[in-house]
Length: 396
Ligand SMILES: Cc1cc2nc3c(=O)[nH]c(=O)nc-3n(C[C@H](O)[C@H](O)[C@H](O)COP(=O)(O)OP(=O)(O)OC[C@H]3O[C@@H](n4cnc5c(N)ncnc54)[C@H](O)[C@@H]3O)c2cc1C
Image 1 (cartoon, rainbow, N blue to C red):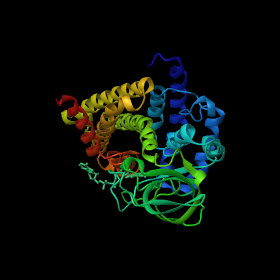
Image 2: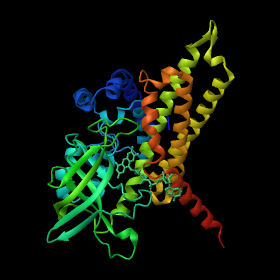
Image 3: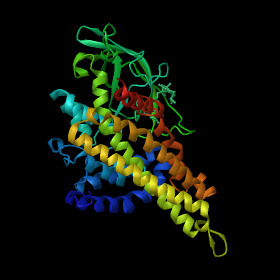
Image 4: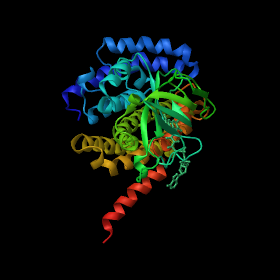
């Protein structure tokens, strides 16, 4: 992969920009309110556009670079080394998933009104599926409904953990449109809801590990009360919401997993620097301790293994599609999330009190990336589904 000429050209440029322009800014993002940080990030986004590095995850037909998933995975790792990388380069969740969805399944009108401004970074969006009153790990069971009245849907329901809802121009809402459908997988649809539609109430930004943040960097609880949108706002055929969601998740998990590997690399770097320089007594470095050496060796091995697993999965999706790679997609989701958690924990422990405060990004990641084992399907659900598929092959 390192022999890939496109990556040989791209990755050093991205790394330089991340090191020189973004890492010096990341503490502002971690410490300051979103409305103060957003203009600083907007200036960096303009620089990325001028450098021709915007929208690297997108196909050429909408002005992207047409990278394969395996190629973008390497980019995602570089961007993941700072919490603001993906946002500044215009390939942040949840927008990137919504862009892919609209690109492949949107109508021409939806593309013109929602996709293109999103691609250009002029607006933001969010994805509103999980509900406080129903288990997100069983997404076919939900309470939000979209009832057809003439040429409109009337949407009612409660959602939460809708990431980046504050300031978003629209939400893609998953709602039951076909309760009578025999298959539970064919009852819901995805519908575009402009956030300024009457009846959309953003109740609060949910404090995550004590911090609610704002803007792109927030997770909202939203009530949809008699929200009316035209039927033409539905994405894809009626009742196909889950099928579309499944397609969205394959590439999305590669993006997340490679971002987590970028976080691991940065945490590893901070941990090793600290271990090499911190002295426990004059002339006795922290890194001389066998226990710290063991954390370093274990982390190095786990990050390496995780990267190879994810890139192998990305290549399989590139070659044969998401469905063919569904076992690997489940495996990387829980495996890499746990590597991330272990590496962050070891880095934090190595740093001691320094690890607990926000003088490095470790504590921020420790708080916010614990969720990696929960969102996009909790560990247990992925383990269960992959094990069931494996066992099925052994049955007579
Ligand atoms: C930071 C963050 C951001 C998020 N962003 C979004 C977003 O933008 N849009 C959106 O729609 N949602 C989002 N989510 C929601 C996320 O997708 C759900 O939290 C997730 O799907 C789990 O659903 P739940 O929270 O309802 O947990 P539940 O389904 O209630 O599960 C609770 C726990 O039960 C266990 N469990 C569940 N099923 C099984 C099983 N079959 N076997 C064994 N154990 C099981 C797991 O340990 C699980 O963690 C986000 C969540 C977080 C934390």
